[in-house]
Image 1 (cartoon, rainbow, N blue to C red):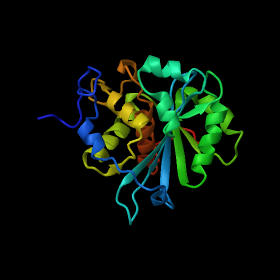
Image 2: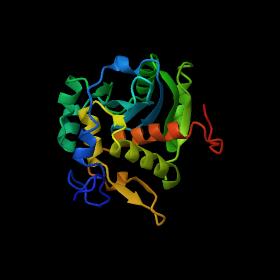
Image 3: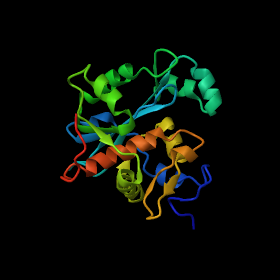
Amino acid sequence: MKWPFSRAAPQDAESSWISRHVWMQCADNFDLALLEDRRCWGGLDLSSTQDLTAFVLAFEPSEADPFWRLLPHFWLPGEGLYDKGDQDRVPYIAWRDAGHLNTTPGRVINKLYVLREISNICAPYNVQRIAYDRWRIEECLSLSKYNTTFPQLKGFGQGYKDMAPALDEFERLLINQELRHQDNPVMTWCAFNAITSSDPAGNRKVAKDKATGRVDGIVAAIMAIGISIKKNDEADKSPVV
């Protein structure tokens, strides 16, 4: 019997943390109108220079719709995209042309450009908070000041302490088919690349350093789910801006 989630270290479609069966049984090309008037939380995995930037909104269930819904967005630098696709062995050009991948001007990620686009993405929705990697806290804080309507940003630790409960909840939603995604090919690629590492206590996180492909979309989705389950956690004292 193949378990729905593999903890094996080798990085390929057969041994990835999220199996093809589990991921695809949650695929649903839903209409965006279904997301109106629902609370949601964001996860932002902002790249430093030329890597993939991912932003994912997770919409909570409603009375009319019992599923969590994921809405992902991705960015890469526009210049050199063909070479980047050849290097990563994925069709970035085709994904861009189909509307699954956005590009920013230049050869490196324009973070201000991305944050302005995120502000526009969030505008129609009831976004509660956006979680992001604390390692880039100062950059996010300074850039967010360019737009006073930007949703609240909240640092989210990338270690086992913060990521483990978020990953566990994300896994539970997938296994129980309580989550739906639109099978964005960039997101699906990230899902199949994801493998996990564990600490001595058995807490898990996505192991970026062991992945041979990008996993940023899944990390962003896990942070979005993680920040949603922290909404009533009074013990969480990290700053909100």
